[in-house]
Structures are given as structure tokens and as C-alpha cells.
Length: 276
Length: 300
Image (cartoon, rainbow over the protein chains, first blue to last red):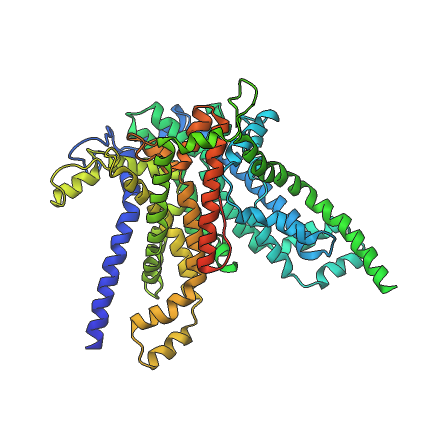
């Protein structure tokens, strides 16, 4: 009795799980299907549910002829530099908040963390004007600078630094090490798990970033992937197969990274919720 | 004596502390705090880049309040707010489904999560193709005899906004699911066992034990999804550009258009100030409702 009821419940659960899985995976299948067709047309009615014949030529075309490789390198550059800057500045700002007793600490704490609580919309417009005055429009510096300090990172790193026993820095201080040396060579390596979780979170943000580079960059050669795909799609409106191949190529790195480093991803993405 | 000693150490630490803080603080000052102030200032001016700034008082605000386009965008943003954040609770169901020891459950978690790490451009373009009038969604629904004729998912002004809301949720669900999953895994199993021994039914356990323990997570997801709903931009920009006939034009899209297409920076700033006020009120309502803090991102 109990067993058959249990089994019935399990079947319901499986049906529901599969239902959600179909909804979440179908767009990927559809994009992939479009990307391997010889004459892909998303307006074809009735549509071909299975591609026939299958070709991977579209990938080669979008990669070299349509220049996706260039946008790929742009995104890699933006992601690597963006993440390094985010980690470095968050570690700098968070360290004294966790380890020093200094005048004005409370105010600095609020100044660093208030952006977490204050959603302000004017940033796009004013930062655009500021960058124009600094002659940083159409540069990666201009894309990165306004997003360089992550209040969330400062918050996470401060928590992590707080957790290190005092003996570590005392021992180094007795040995005559300078404060920046202690920070960089002794304390920061001890918070590596937090850094990697935060770095992954930021890597996702930088890899997928759209609106801000769209505003700052005017030269389409400098576009990161997300902006470039939109640009490709509007330039080659009827060549769905190339855009589709580009979309798959753009999504693959994060999906592969996620499959292999699931634990870090989940830790990074859930860190905010757990600790608040 | 000892007091003086502590004071001297503290002074020395203060110097070092500010050496650490100076660079991040300057960047925050220029790109986070300055925009907050200057954005408000700009909203009282007419400024288009070419001619010099001109003081116009509250004219930009008056213009907004008399503009149908503004109220239309407000209406659309509020609709977003009313639909998307509450439906985010559905992620609790997904989390419950995958919160079990079962072979292959990790595959489902991965499936549900992948949209989170896919860029919104890719997501929006994919759904754009699926939603198109002669697209696969209409084909499947017609083949199943669920609809008699194709629906203009993105071309019918009464439907388009809801189609885009679906896309927003489709991408966000996995994130909320992961958060709820983390919450569920923090629920002590002894508590559940004890309740079972006392004869509590599964639904009683869920409503009386699990859900109350998930409350901090519900709050966090609620704040994040509220801010995301009011800031929504990319999916609309990619899929409809605000059309058809402004039917999907939200505040985020209107602010962008007024600033970067019409070069009307003063007016756009006024709109941004209004949206910020709405955002702050919405966040405060959330906080009041659940009591705690949140995260934002308006650049994505």
C-alpha cells in the first residue's frame, strides 16, 4: 500500500521534473538545430524538428569569415581584466575593514556597502557623460572602471578576512613584514575559496555583459560577444544558421566550466543569499 | 599611558587603512556616488551634448507626468513587478523536486541552471525564433490542437509583454532554484524526522517547517527579482525593442531610448530619478515584509 503510493508520487515527480527540463533545454536544442542546418529558416512552416542533413560548416563561417573569433578574444580580454580588477579592488577595500582598528571605520564601511542597498538608475547616463569628459568612451577602461569596485565583493571578502585567526598576521608582523606584504602574501591566499567563488560570479557577469558595453563602445570591432551577436543578428538578418552557431559558441565556455566546476559556481551564486 | 599607546597604534593603523582604501574609494566616488548626486542635478536641466546645459526647473518632471509614453512605461514596469517576482516562488517547487537523493538528479539541476549562465542576448534571440508567428511554438501548439491559429507572441500588443516576462523568468528560475536548494539543504533533517514520527503529513511539514525556515531565502529572491523586474532591459531590447506600438516599453527601455537615441539626457535623468524612487520604495516594501538586505545590478 505505502509502497505503491510512494511509487505513484515518484512518477509524478519525474513527470514534473521532465516537464521543466524540456522547457529549459528546448531553446538550446532549437538553436543547435538551426546552427547545423544547410538552409536554416526559423520562419519555415511547418518547421523541421530534426535537422537533415547536418553540417558544421556554419561554425567555421561564423568563426573566421564573420569574425566571431575577434569578438571572442574581446570577451576573453574583458572577462580576465574585469575579474582581476574586481578581485584586487575588493580585497584592498575589504582588508582594513576586517583587520584594522582605525578612525572613520564605520563610515568607510557604510560608504563601501551602501551601493548594495541603493538601486540607483542614473548611473548609466552620468557615467556615460563622465567617461566622455575623461575621453574614455569607446575603450575597455571605460567599460570596466564604473564596475571596478563590487560592493558585494567587498562584503564577501570582509567576511572571509574576519574569519582568519589573529596569530597569522602577528607572526608575520614580528618577522618585520610590511602591511601590504602581509595582506598580499599571507592573508589573501588564505581566503582563496571566497575569491574563487566571487571570481566565477564576476566572470559570468563579464562574459554575458550587454547594456554597458553597448553604450560605451561605438566601434563594433570592440564589441564583446553578447553585443556582437545582437549586431550579427541584425546585420545578417536572414542567416539564422550563422547567428545560431555564434550563439552556441558564445554559450559553450560557461556551460563547460559549469559542468566541471559546479561546486564553485553554486557557492559563488548562493553566497549572497546565505550570508545575508 | 596605555590609552595613549592605543591611540598611537590606532593613528598608525588609520594611515595604513586609508592607503588600502583610497583607490577603491575614489572609483566608488566617481562612478557610484557622483552619479547619484549629478543624476538628480541633471534632471533639472535640458542637455543634449551639443548645446550647453540649460536650467529648466521641474519641466522634465512635468513633461514626464503629462506624457502618455511615460505612463505607458510605468504601467508596463508595474505589470512586470506584479507578475515576475511573485512567480519566482515557483522556483521553490523546482528546488523541492531536485532536493532528493536520486540517480541522475544532478543532470536535472544542471539543466535547470544552465539558462542562468547563458547571456541574455543568446536567450532572447533563441526565444525570438521560437516565438515567431511561423515558429515552432505555434506549430507545436497547433499540432496539439491547443490553439486554432498562430498567435503573435511578440507581435500582438496584448501578449508581447507577457511573452517577454516568460523569458525573464525562464532565465532567472535556475538561480532562484539554486538559492532555495541551498536553503532546503540547511533544513536539519532531524527536524523533519521528528515531525514525521509525530505523524505530521508532508504538506504540514512543508508549510509549518520547511517554508518558515526558507524565509530568508524567499526575502533575498524577492528583493533580487523585484530589482531585476524594474530594471528589465536586454530581453526587451533584443526581442521587440519596446514594440509593437510601445506595448513592451518599460521604464528601463524608455530611459535608454531617451538618453542614447534621442540624446535627451536631462529628461532621461528625470525618468531615472523617478524609477529610482520607485525602486527604493519597492525594496523598502520588501524589507518591511521580510526584514533584511539585497543586491543590485543595472549594467548587465
